[in-house]
Image (tube, rainbow, N blue to C red; front, side, top):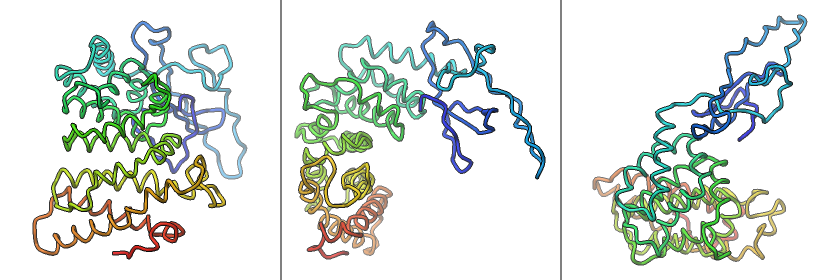
Length: 360
């Protein structure tokens, strides 16, 4: 969303957007507010949004002609859609962001001394424009992603912080996701971001539960991209998640509950919600999976989850009915698994995948 786009009346406007009223159309518009480093040409220019209100229109009365909207940095020229300069932004946040990025660039590899910097950037990355600004920095993104790589010497705490930071930056932020995916992360053509994250999840040395949970969350954010989602399925990503879910070891544990919730959410939000979508796996005719040779990879990956979800729900229900204290993490896992289980079994998905499995 680098250009101004119309905001409809029923849309909520996230924090961090630059909003204006287009007097030529009388419509509200918004775009990302992405600051530039101090010293960048036009970085100090501001678009003033305190424009006159839209003229009131009496019922059945004449419509007042709206004045032509001008680019306020060049008032004598006609406004050109898409040409803009960043509006004013928080100077303290800007200073923190650019000093933190500079600190990341100055390191050879991330270590525990960088944890405060990672934490500061993670706080900023919740904002749409800082998420995009971070995702556009090739060197910083490569440093963060290298820390997650199985061959990294970074500690579990540093790996976990890097995964959380990247997942936060691209969460529900399409421009940040596109920017992040535009960078090279390996000289090997086949090592896409999703493949590297799956390799990290399969690393037998890394057993830290928080790291695993945050890495699954990052994987889910990457799978917002249709191509990365297809690669996830083709690379047996569902099998990797299944191994983390551990349906045969259904002991309730707060750490495992969080992993199970994240896995169920990924399957529901990224896989099952894409079934039947023209932009997802199944074509509009429903006869094939777009981008794959056939639907076998998806069916093979989803089949074990029918039984796994059923077993998990029975276990969580049994514990709840026994009077034991159930943690919030267990409650969240139960709800996420229940929702994914229902989605997995509904409509034509049931006849293809769960036809031989009994529902809870």
